[in-house]
Length: 85
Image (cartoon, rainbow, N blue to C red; front, side, top):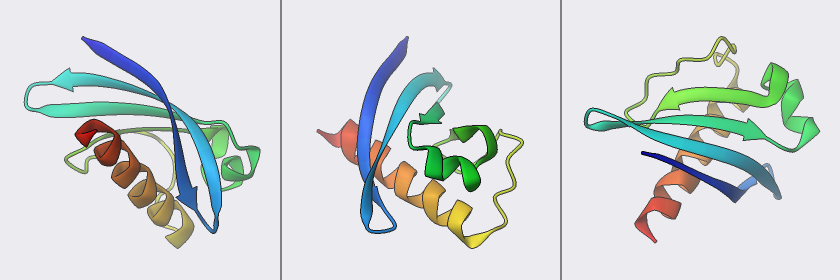
């Protein structure tokens, strides 16, 4: 089953919006995130990330930079918070 929703979350002292698609893969969740804010496209080219909540990043984006790691962390925390509601 796939769950699709929009998510607002704080990042760099502002609220960002993303379209999130979650899919179960065994005991993990695969997250496909499309960031609506064009400023984020400077951090993540194309504005999309694909990763598992367990921490495996499946996208081709370079996540070695600190802003990209911070964005991934904020996104993951927001998704986990959404799922707990």
